[in-house]
Image (tube, rainbow, N blue to C red; front, side, top):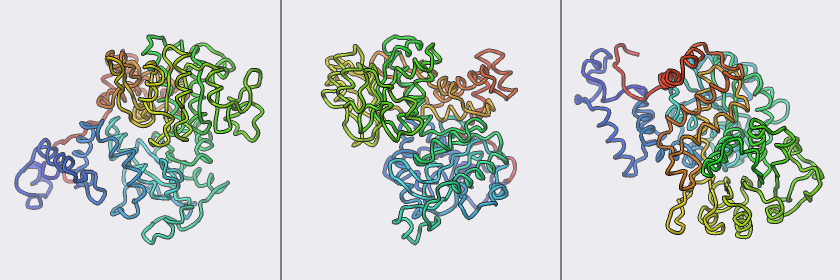
Length: 543
């Protein structure tokens, strides 16, 4: 009765479903069941117990509890708790949730997908387990990340749980501790790379999108070697996206727009920002590219937009003199002139005088007192985003940012930080949380039948967030809305994505087209109807 109502079935329903005598005689309302689950949760019993918790016992109840307590429980369903679940997935396994594809299935995946019982699948999340959060190579234990991500699709954006599919691609693992563990259930072999890797992913993508061509496919936690090449391989022809690259970039852009809203500025003024990116990996270059796209939308040429962004890493400022750069980094390398190769971070801050500094280097407290003071002296309201996580890898804390800029900083972080008391007031600190973007992005792409997720759709998603920040929160420096109204956030993002898709000729759902044509009120109501609401319905037949 995983998707059933448990003791919530009425007596008549029990009779019709052949459950009479199989359940205790008293009928418990959903509210009573929720109270019991919350009592377990609040007294330390794990209501998400993977050995048989709420989700397995009563799926509808699980998602209702999660939705009604989203701000608190999202971190339990997903990061950071999902990291523990992935580390221990092979020990916690009791029954399958999702699909496993491995190199031993080569040539069979197109038929394998028909073993999945759902005729309709609207969202798929896949990982190869090679870079799970900050935990490294966890092999097929990475399936936990796909499960957790889709739980948030259901709670935050109203996808139907029965129409989601978590997947893992078992390419082997280089984690010898796992391979030596007799309870590890993945292939005992080194990771596959090179052409064979891409051949297997090609087969997987063709198989799942062949059976479910309208599904959104999200790549999750692939290592840096493969993440961007996979995105570029499919993004122009398939409905795919990568949250690690595009979601992080989009939520960061949304934060910059939010910081501009704090200052009372219009979106077009993003073209006047000067951005110093600290970290030039997939996250840093993804953010740089997204900022570039937004600046072009608001009037700059590609070359002008590139000139507004500087990249630096452990070897200093990146210029065209740097050898061995990845292609995506070359596009943002400074071309000489006043930009000295290898310039140290503090010198770059003092010379460039950036209005925005974004840290994604995961190298600890790089935003020193001297750097923060320089930002505060050079800008009326410096935008300081310390996005690395976990805590020990953050570039600075919210308290340090406010202390060393004399309360001027507009701050966001990758790890939640408390608000900061300064003078007679309190300055808001907000987390740059991808949950604000990817559920709504996936929903908009799915409902619009957009076929692709374009950069312009991502910019539209980013621009949907700042209007949702309450006026009093803006006045305290908050750049993001809270998670309490996550359904409202996801709906706003989905609508923005669909409207952009329609404008660019990517909306292929006639019902969505018709709803848009009748005005915002009808469109809003149409989207709301498409979002599944967790709850009980009358059972009229046995499954």
